[in-house]
Image 1 (cartoon, rainbow, N blue to C red):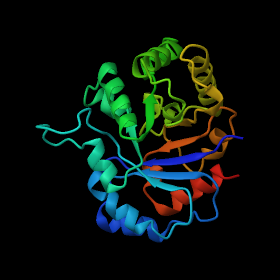
Image 2: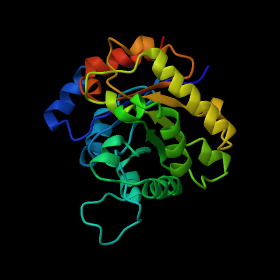
Image 3: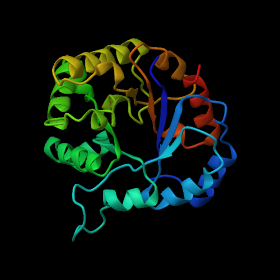
Length: 252
């Protein structure tokens, strides 16, 4: 059985006081899944400090990295600096980065390789928009995003083990809509089959996460699917009690 993951993407949320409240209401010591969070970069040290008494499986990462090591790139965060803060992973290709900040496939591919160079695990996000799903283009969109984002991915086994893929249907992010467990399973099965047959990954070992309005109320049906190894969670990861409930569901 593959390891399960609950990964909280806190986006541009959480203040110092709400971080304190999160950890006061967090109860995950008895869970068996991996529990990861990606706060705003300036909060990484504070989150790590608050998490020091958590017994197992808790990691802190970044929501994005710069493709360059250093230089005149105002407002960017380097992989090296994030590592220095204690980050162990980074999201790359989240739909908000693709659509709001216009990050294209070539840039995402460079960021993935750069993150690996700095020993950061990559959670690579892919997913279709509503019109693409309505037009029957879901598999074509996922295939293209995987081909371009993972182009020339290093063959080294240890680096391939640092890849996680998150399927996040854009139409189900922050909308209250959610893919049915059957829809989500279908997409995850396609991703696993494609990376195995066309991209030469050991597909059975690559963790696949579902991201799209996951909540404690709908998590059990999603996480019970054969090819879904966990969830990338937005709003429902901001409260310690909700995050704990998700981790407990994933640990069943």
